[in-house]
Image (cartoon, rainbow, N blue to C red):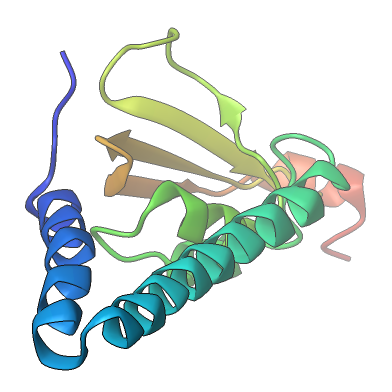
Length: 143
């Protein structure tokens, strides 16, 4: 079942109403300006999407420089794309395909990891699990 959010409905209504209102106010010139504005908005979002995914593709799946820093920057309601931009890597999937909530994990070099739960593409819960003390000594993080 596909779940639509109110935000998606609002975007669709604005995309339909903007050209109509522009035509009523300025005629066909208004429609051309409204169409140009909508295309520009779509291009900005497409560019951001491709940039985030290109950066994430250059890094190992499930790896983050610092799990603690990622954990500190997370907040409820973040979109999956925003979390990918913060982590700069794709998360390692922990849940079955199509299962809600989707669970992803990002691990740092010291063994600490952040596990994030997404429902309908939005962050609903996350936790930081630090590495055991013995793993820190083996990694050379603690002397």
